[in-house]
Structure formats: structure tokens, C-alpha cells
Image (tube, rainbow, N blue to C red):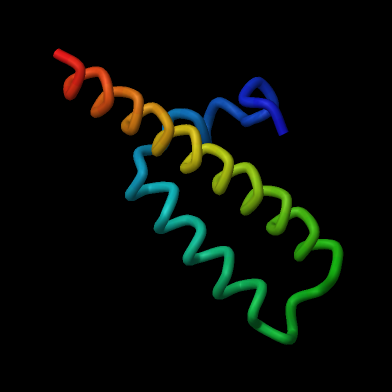
Length: 70
């Protein structure tokens, strides 16, 4: 999934906000009474949030690496 495919509402989230939403989605998905249609939508959002968090970590790593080079 490319960065462009991540919705703006997810791109604007901080690491903490994304992590909190992931926790909420995981709780919903673990509920055995959740229907499959809702679960697929939640799962796709979870994947997008995860990708966003990965991008945030990569940006932070690049920032730290650049500081260390100075």
C-alpha cells in the first residue's frame, strides 16, 4: 500500500492517536459477535493505520540518522 492510498484523516494522526485507534479496532475485531462486513472495513483501516505508523517511524529514523551525521 503506497503512502498516497492512506486517507488524509489517518495521515494527520500522531503516533499516539494511530496507536490508540489500532487498539480500539483490535478490541472490536476480537469481539466474536462482530459481523464480517464490518470486520473487513475495520481490518482495512487497521492496515492503513499500521502503514501510517510505519511511515512515521521511518521519518523519525531518517531524522535521527541525519542528526547523527552532523
